Image 1 (spheres, rainbow, N blue to C red):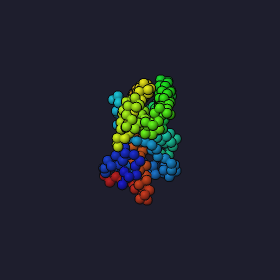
Image 2 (cartoon, rainbow, N blue to C red):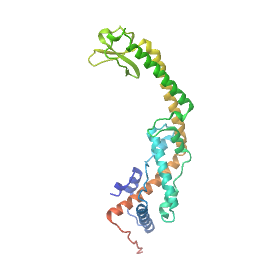
Image 3 (cartoon, rainbow, N blue to C red):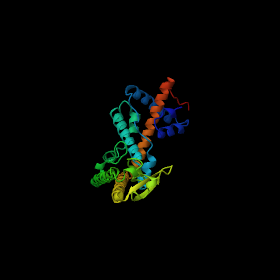
Image 4 (cartoon, rainbow, N blue to C red):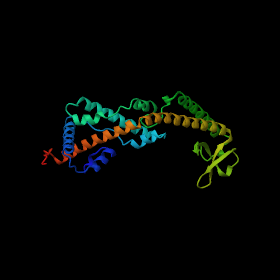
Length: 281
């Protein structure tokens, strides 16, 4: 039941791992944390762990030299932002919530990572053209090559020489190559490479010979773009990997705070009162 009040998986794991304790000091600390968290959530109702995720596995992978998925990198960014926000909040309110402030004080700002991710990825996880001058230049060339290719295909579609041979006056793609639909009975009337045919066999999808080099140039630039994107992400992941241990500690601190907030919410749901714990030994 307590785990159900947690906001992310690392907090849930702590809740599910809880066991009774015979240590009076530990029990009192746990109760005091709950009382503090309950008071905090009552006076600052917007307090939460934000968009934190358990990013320990991807951070560890980055430390081993892996290139992370953009979604994983954004999770790391959002987790670090959530940690910073809680650290600031509890730092200001340390006198009122000393036990929670101690937990939050262990959160590392991981200097430079959030900013580096912000310079590299947009909110959808796309690598920004401004991430490198080379990427910006390649993308400009990609757009020019793409426009040239489509203009040539439109010229072919608009030519009276081929109109009667075409199934439709449209441009489509097969296997990343731009093609036009040719009626199967006119095979050979438009010189080109056949990439596919319709289910009925009535239509052939042909890449005209006149556009093969333009298609090649466009595809080559796309490959250069992907190579530069991978280089940028590898560089970013090396930065993340260098602070993987700090990221791990941040997740652990956020999990402790998440557990404290969950206990507070559960206490509210039960209309609970902190019990006096006595030592009978």
